[in-house]
Amino acid sequence: MTAPSSQTMAIQACLDRLRGGDESARAELLNRACGRLRALARKLLKGFPKVRRWEQSDDVLQNALMRLYRTLKDVPPQGVSDFLRLAALNIRRELLDLAKHYYGPQGRGARHATWGTDDSSTRGDESGLAPPDDPSREPGRLAAWSEFHEQIGALPGEEREVFDLLWYQGLSQAEAAGLLGVSERTVKRRWQSARLRLHEALKGEVPE
Image 1: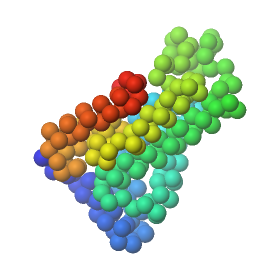
Image 2: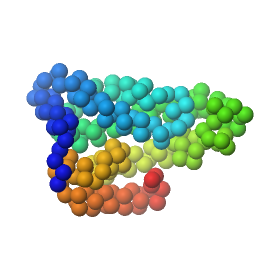
Image 3: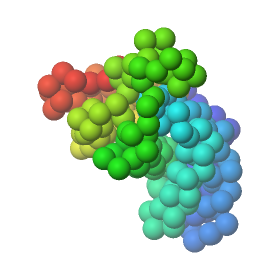
């Protein structure tokens, strides 16, 4: 099994202090994890290309960190994997709220002439069409994306944490194994089981 990194151990130390009542650990925790969370926000924002037209990853991260800071006061996570899952959840919620804000019925993005124009600077690609995986392209697609996240939240705990680490966090199976203190074989088994459950729940509509 892969040993936890020094950053992982530092984050765990902050979590232990936070659960022990040290309020100063909240801000330190976010500072220590900021680099990892910034990379996560950048990755998740790629799934919302039309939101990216209006918002930058640092702005998304800043708002998500405010959400996370408040959440940590009420729900201090037990371990690093729990903390990362909670962080990913808050970033996803921020992105979904932004998608609804810009592309809901009254959103300015939905009324904006973005596609099919001659201005290449406002296009998602050379065709002038929204990418097929853009969850903000239409209400139905946004609803499907929301359902996908809800189904992830409904996975059994061990499968959900593996899915979060591999799919959202972008960790390798070896890194996830070290973080969780299990073998890579166990991570692979939970990953495959999680994907199968999602495939069945979503009738095959599982994003790659």
